[in-house]
Length: 243
Image 1 (tube, rainbow, N blue to C red):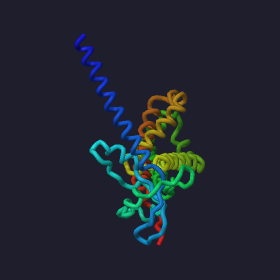
Image 2: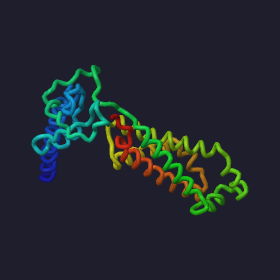
Image 3: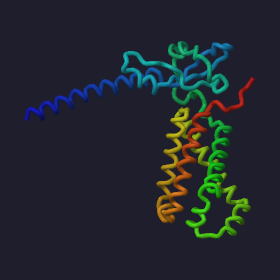
Image 4: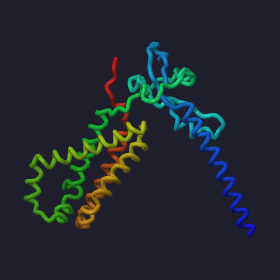
């Protein structure tokens, strides 16, 4: 009975603390959400910035939130700035919902193209005679002569490249929508997208021969990590900078 009372008291205290944290996070979101007009310190031209409310809410437990910008209409050209307009953004009144959007949910094409090419090239090496071609031939049940013919066909290579490109754009879109960047977020988004694709096609994948399943699973894992690392790591770095 005493143990039950202590357990109830513990749950009440934890619930109260979580409720305070939820109210605090909600206040942070209400205070710092939305696009805010500023004058860029570099040239005093008008810009719209957004404060990273997720980071602010995550650091509010230390007493005061750590504030930083999450996007700006001058990025990516000036994405390496020192965020000298942050004080303006804090004092500025945010635009009303729908009036303006801070930053751009932009997809940068060069990292996507590089990631798609890397995934395609990894597949070429993975299925070459240097690695798993012999096991792949045996698992599929075709002859070496047929493989030589397939190598010179154009449409299998185009189809593989298209799948890699579509997957890379999917990862870039997830990063753009969530306003995330970096190797780890890129890999996480890539794994998430790959898992969704596998879940929707698991019925057909499960029917593959065991050796073929193992070979293709290894390639999918390697390609997924490659695409995520490149797209996330080079998200706003490998872009054409304006003068």
